[in-house]
Amino acid sequence: QVQLVESGGGLVQAGGSLRLSCAASGRTFSNYAMGWFRQAPGKEREFVGSISWNGGITYYADSVKGRFTISRDNAKNMVYLQMNSLKPEDTAVYYCAARTSTLSSRYSIAYDYWGQGTQVTVSS
Image 1 (cartoon, rainbow, N blue to C red):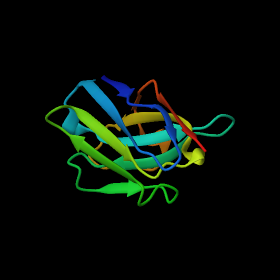
Image 2 (image 1 turned 120 degrees about the vertical axis):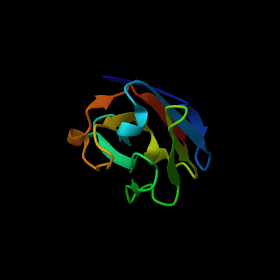
Image 3 (image 1 turned 180 degrees about the horizontal axis):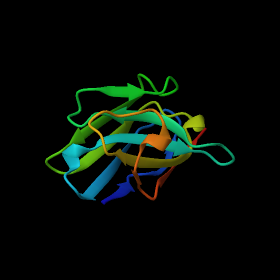
Image 4 (image 1 turned 45 degrees about the vertical axis):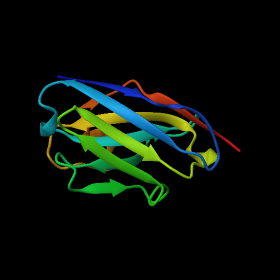
């Protein structure tokens, strides 16, 4: 079992930055690939980005590529999502997720554990 807790969300103006954090506890963190997803009101949950167990491979949704960066610190059991040049359309609840695999996935169904989410609101 892995417990995930996101933090760092908030209200920011368009063009601003936020860094989301996800703290993991439970099993050996380095056994898990990690992903970030988001869900806006009235929309389905969508993939934002993911990172392999050692941080060597990352994937991003086209909508955030070049603006968002995922990183992880296995010694601290943490994964981060640095979000720059934020846009109003980035407004959503952001979730981190853990997959029992060393390789990440773009598909939410591939992930076994989820955090409770953190709200990000970008004003225009």
